[in-house]
Image 1 (cartoon, rainbow, N blue to C red):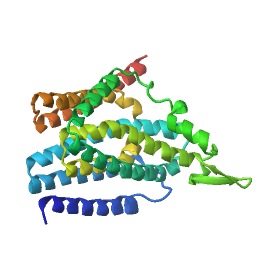
Image 2: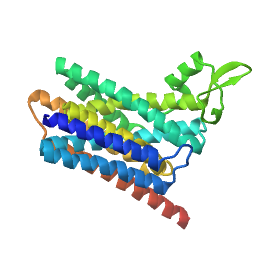
Image 3: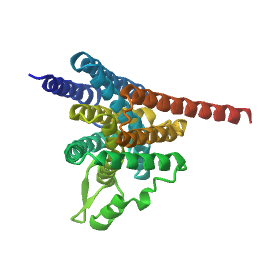
Image 4: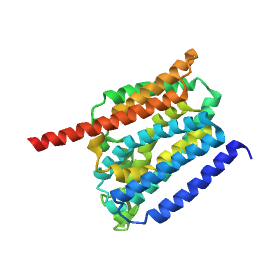
Length: 313
C-alpha cells in the first residue's frame, strides 16, 4: 500500500467514525442544538482536522501537511462567511429551530457530493489545461476586490435570488414548512414546502461559494488528496459552526474584509507564478492565519466598543 493510499484509507476511517459519533450520538433527530453543544461539536470537527494534519506531517512530510492545513483554514474561513448567508436563508423562510439540524445536515451532504464532483472536474481540467490556474487567479483577485469593497447587506437579496425564482416558477410551493416534510398535499395536489426550498437554497449557495473556495485551494495545492480532505473536513464542520455563530452575526462584520484580503493574496500568488515566482506554502499559511484572526479580533473589538458606548449613552 502506497503512502497516498494509506492516507486516503485513514481519512475514510476517520470520516466514518466521526459521522457515526457526530450524527448518531451527539445529534438527535428534531433536537435543538445549544451553544454549548455546538461549541463541543465545533471543537470535535476542528480537532479531527488538526489530528489529520499531524498524521500527514508524520506520514507524508511537512510540505504536504502545511498545504493541507493552509487549504483547510482557507475553506474554514470561507465557510464562516457562508454560514452568515445560511442564517439569512433560515430567517427569510422562517425555519423552525427544531428543524435546523436536519435541514442543515441534508443540505451539507448534498454540498459535499457536489464539491467532490467539482473538484474532480477541476483536477482534470488543470491537468489538461495548466493555464486555467491563471484564470482562477484572476477570478480570485477580482472576487477579493469586490468582496472587500462591498457594503454589508448588499450582496444577498433572497427575494431576487435566481434559484428561488426558478423554484417559484416551475414548482408549486407552499409557505408552510410542512412540519419538516419536503412536500404536502393540499386538496389532492402536491406542493413543495419551505423546508424543501431551504435545502435547495443551502446547496446552491454552497455551490456559489465553492466557485471561489475550490480555486483558492488549487492555488495552495494541486494534490487531489489535499484538496479533497481539506474541503470535506471544512464542510462537515459547517453545521456545528452554524449553531455556534447564528447569534453572533454582527460580531464578525469585518470578517468579510479579512477573507477578501486572503483571496486577493491567493489570486496574486497564482498570477505571479506566470513569472516563475513561487511563494512558499508557509507564507500562504501565515497570511491566512493573520488575516482571519486580525479581522475576527477587530470585529469583536468594534462590537464590544459599540456596546460600551450604548451603555454610557
